[in-house]
Image 1 (tube, one colour):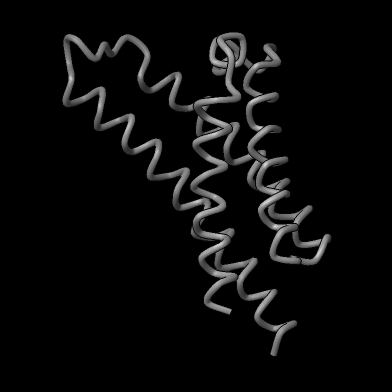
Image 2 (tube, rainbow, N blue to C red):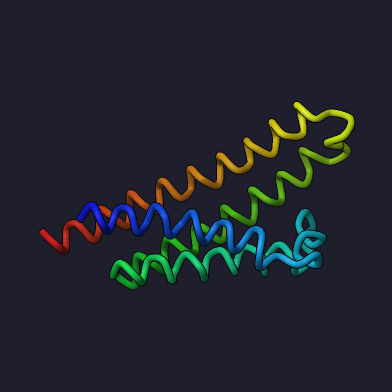
Amino acid sequence: MIFTFFVLLVGFQLKHFIADYLLQPRWMVQGKGSFAALGGYAHAAIHAACSAIVLLVVSVPVGLILGLCAAEFVIHYFLDFAKIHYTSGIEERREPARYWGLFGFDQLLHQLTYVVMVYSAFSSVSKVLS
């Protein structure tokens, strides 16, 4: 069961890197912060889809996968939406401590989302394996 825990933990870290840094073109970045633009929705959907893959790998029940990924989609979208607004006008060059503090806070909130997802998935899978 410890292997399942680490697959979830590492899987979510890898998927976060892939979804945030490799699968996020400029139009997605520019679409965050506006309910009318598709970019933020597409980005959150990529996160949810990649999370579904991680959860499928460890045989999480489909109903739980759908619930966790729907919750992640909403939470991820609104975290990114909020970040665009609370960091507006803050430039790394002029206010590096504030810029990186807010950037780190945003990443922390995303990581805490994964903590909840790992806990929920691991609890579900460990019950089935018991």
